[in-house]
Length: 281
Image (cartoon, rainbow, N blue to C red; front, side, top):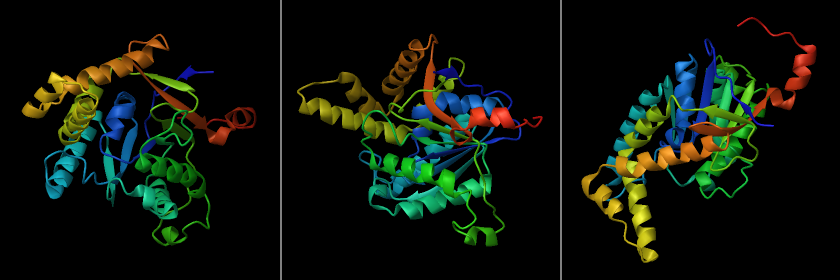
C-alpha cells in the first residue's frame, strides 16, 4: 500500500543521500531534498564520482572543475548542508571493488549518523543501465547493515567513530521496485527545476547525446541545435523535469510528485510499534 511520506519536523535529524553523479540528487529527487531542507532536516550528499568525462567539447580538467562548481551550486539551491566527495573517476565503478566502495560509505554513515539513508534502489523493476548507479545501490544497501557491526572496519573506531544504525532507508530510481511512499513536490518543483538547470555542463552533454541518437534515427531536433549553440539548457530540461513530476503526481492525485520505496526499522516497524515506546522529539 502506497502512502504519503511525512517529512515534517526534521530538527536534529540527518538525511544521508549517496549518489553516483552530480546531477543525480536534482534529477531523481530534487523536490524531496528541497522539502527535507525546508522542514529542518540536515541533508548531506555523498557524490561517489568526479564526473570527469560528463561534458561535450570540453577538456577533462575543465569538466571536473565545472561539474564540481555546478554541483555545489545545485546543492545550495536544494538547501543541502554538506557534500562529501569520494573522488572515483566517473563510469568506472563497475570495475571497482564493492567492499572498497562500501567501506567509504560505512565511514560516512558513522561520521554523519543519519536518521535516513537514501540511495538508488538495487531492486528496481526495470534494468538500470548505469553501472555507477548499480554499484552505489549495492554498496550502500550493504553498508546499511555493516555500519552497525563492531567488527566491520574497527579502524574507524580508532578515529573516534562508532557503529550506527539508520532508522529508515529510502530508495529511488528510474522505476523503484515497489512504490511505498510518495512525496508531494508541488511546492518545491520550481526549486528542482532550478537545481537541474544548474548542471549546465552535464546537461549540454545530455543534449549532445540526444542529438546523436536522433541523427542515427534520421531525425532533426531544432531545439537541441539551439541548446547546443546557445549553452542554455533550460529549454531542454525544464519541460522534461516538469513533465516527469506531473506524470508521477497524476498517479497519486497530485500536481507533482516523486516516488520511493522506503523501509523503516529494517522492515520490523510494526513490531517496534507493539513493543517499543517512542521518545519525545
